[in-house]
Length: 373
Ligand SMILES: [Ca+2]
Ligand SMILES: [Ca+2]
Ligand SMILES: [Ca+2]
Image (cartoon, rainbow, N blue to C red):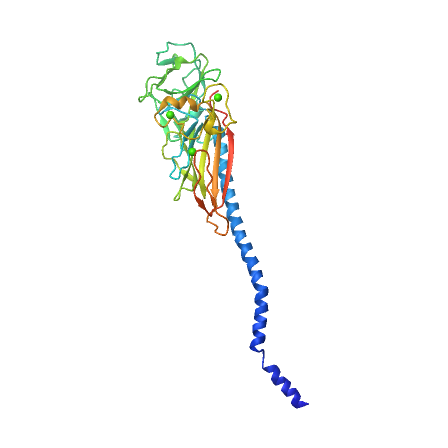
């Protein structure tokens, strides 16, 4: 009995045979491989989904900013002529990006953007934005470089030095930027006050620094005249930039600053396209229905800008009513496990060649409220 027990022990101690091991390993692999397969493909699709939803967030964020700015185009600058020429609410430059993307600049007056009082006002000096609004009095000859106003200028601040956002305007020449607006609000102009006469109360507006300084007297009585902070006229440009020309950039600056401070808004943006709608064919209706390329009221394949030196088409800018924005985002990396696709054609930009990126296109038609009448 003892012998039998020892024999059994001996056999048990011999462990698994090679055959047993191979069978067990085989069964194990049979179970594990499909599990690993499921895990790896769900991990892959997780990565793709994550990449795609990141793309989606990018295009949405970019669109949000652009819509807000486009709605403001032209606000507060109607017919505004400055030292740099007439300002327009929209500047559309077609296909100027290295990858064929478009560029859009929106110009508007934002009274909150740049206060005159930046904390550096010299003591005892007026803040220009505190100068009271004055009104035109009896018409003087149109060629006169002085205009009577109804209000008493002495002691009002108009006849003293004033400070605005880093600039000190000093007498006797001043150089105050003012904006004159007709009583109906249908006309306004930038003017430069070149002097102030207190008794009787007159504002002088002679030619200034090559600027014609259109005389006050082309405006009707009771037109308002108030200090105008030029820093508050913003030019906001959207374009694709960055190392690979695939970052949506927003450059907001005052209109007479050429450089500004470009900020990246969204990455992995492959294309940015615009179309402008307005009554370009002059039949008093804006046709939004037919496709852009067969519609006399739609422009998407040539620039419409005052910056090109060709003034013949500049008047059309005022009739822009709708801007169609298209942003195309794509995944950060190609995904070879998915079927190939191509960058789609958008507006006048033809489709690209086939690759393995995934893309999301977001489009919006934004009404421009402030251009023209
Ligand atoms: Ca284009
Ligand atoms: Ca039309
Ligand atoms: Ca032009």
